[in-house]
Length: 136
Image (cartoon, rainbow, N blue to C red):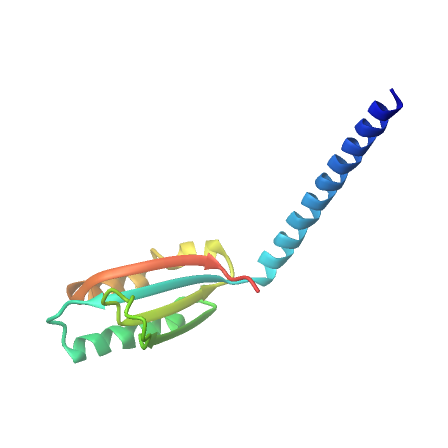
């Protein structure tokens, strides 16, 4: 009988430790998310007949969005130079950062973003978009 009570006590202690530990992990995650930024990664594959001038216009107009949309926290872009050949034809990558999902959600339908999309669509062959919360 003593062994049963000891076993029950150990199980209860382990359960309590797991509950406390789980709560601490959630607190840390919440704190980290407050310090983190939401990354919006956009990769373009342009149509074969897109001219260099058209592509340059897309890059230029995308670069103007941070001036027009206050919810954008940070912006950068570049062209693919990976030697791995897994790009599936995507040549241009843009990284737009936001402080919250609400900021990202305000950006997507923003008139300036929609005007940019109108410039982009005629020469766009494919796009890949991934959003994630940055972690250290």
